[in-house]
Length: 464
Image (cartoon, rainbow, N blue to C red; front, side, top):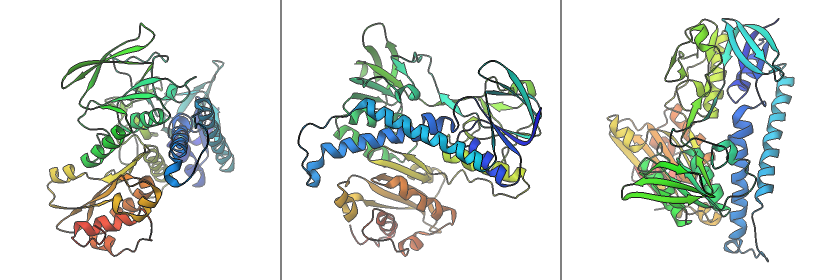
């Protein structure tokens, strides 16, 4: 029986990052993985979807080449099979990169299904059904999540699918209903619509991307509708009839029921944590609504057992899982890491236009009792955005009127998923609006819109 300081179950962005950091801190580490190193994010989520979205963007540029003074002779066509292959190649390359990092950092990989059998013991069942046991003083659960299924929307993997199948369809569907407009739903809706699939995007809440600021959500809806995507908000899928060649999707709207026919229905209604059959009940590890209960350093109620990522409360985001993993192992190693501030977590949606945000929305700031100043700068007034042909969008900043502290940043437009990190740093350092105004931003850049939005909040804006 092999003994380690730390065993991590799951090698996604929470698990593999925790393992590498633990090894850097001098601990003997092993990672148990049932499938591919890198978990869902690298293999079936963040990375391969961004590859598909880049392919869609390249196709979009090609079809609008004339707008940039470029003439393309002949018809420009999307090659769906080649797009999917490129996506898989990118994902495979990233997974191999984790293998390299594990070797470099002396992290051992154990392949199979990991399950807690005692406080300090993990039993691993390999693909042949053979069981082996390993012990560790500390065991970190990082088993991630999967596509959530609704009772009236059961996934059959053929006509009603989840995000994983959407990445590897054999052929491009002529039509698709996407249920749910969070990041996953909106990104797939954008991808398939851009390459020519007739997409209907259905959202139960009044706006798309419901966690985002209302103005951002409305701008995204305008852009989707301008591109001729059918968008149905405040609507719910009641049932799907898959008995014929096409799916007949019954959708309840404010005006009554509507039936939409489609080749494929993509269910993107959230995720479910992978907490089954990993030994939680047997060891008495406490859970709440399916998620493992932990303290600020990710300790469970059972000594020596920890949990991070999508199986604990908080935003189900790759970068959050990574941060949790680092915080967890640094505490295990005897350091004194600062607990994560969950009020300063950036979120990104990689549609076109892109969406990003951090902190309180305008509505949430008012609900919290703040007196606020709001500054907004449109991309239509940005020289770089005009030059790039991306004039749709804006940067919106929210400040505490009393102290000038940044409360939230909300962006939609080209490059905003790269720009949001500046706002995370600003918020962490409690930068005021006037300090942002006096921070010189390079010209011409889209990031100038941050400085201008801050200036707009204090009636000092120059370019609008």
